[in-house]
Length: 332
Image (cartoon, rainbow, N blue to C red; front, top):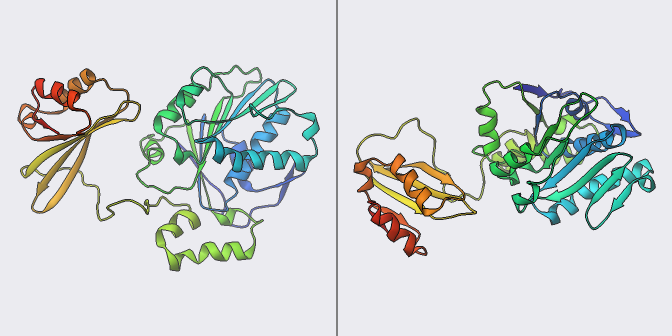
């Protein structure tokens, strides 16, 4: 993995296509990996820089297909779409772009750019792109990302690689994006660009001071939005927990089963020993039929643990009965 950290001194004021840009524009422009991750605090210019980069490529490259997405369409229209249109307007070339306002399609010469949402991942399955940008990427599931990554298959004629860019505030240290980075094993296919407000010389002093004041108000907010470091979700039910390497032997063991289909089906093991509760995720997967689930439960539970109580979603009595008939001590 390529770890690109922008300088923490004041970024140089550069002009491209009559824009003022920060170093993040060049960090992303010069990235040569297929996955480019922009993790940063508030006001670091990561979103603005990616909007500039996509517009720059849209105007200067040939025969390319671009996709800019957020998880929901209202959020997209109020953020990325407005920013992109503002940049176009600043350049004074709005009249040169063919725009389909209802479909959110933009055409310039042989290039095509689409703004979209991914509230339903099926929407992306029949498409292909050269460049994709996931704004507020922590809103997306890992399945969303995998589907979109597979869409990076549009042909190129200039020798360039297809790329997927991601930008976000790192609000949750347990997010799948962090796990992907940690598990990349030094992959040369990922570039991580870390940025903070210090990388943006165009911020007002008042805004800088408000970010710096967070250290006295909320240390988690300060870590995430000022330092661009991974934080913890503030609205979780329990926060007095930690990760352990192993669960000790012995103790009382029960299981919890939550049925899903489009949403993942989840099976967890709960062990209580010496007044300490240990939780292990055993199954977390969407689109499992009951027979698929039973097969996986046979794989992950020993004969002894099949006799332990499994408390399941009471709304699915037929599925509970079928699992009980398969030899599990499942209860509503």
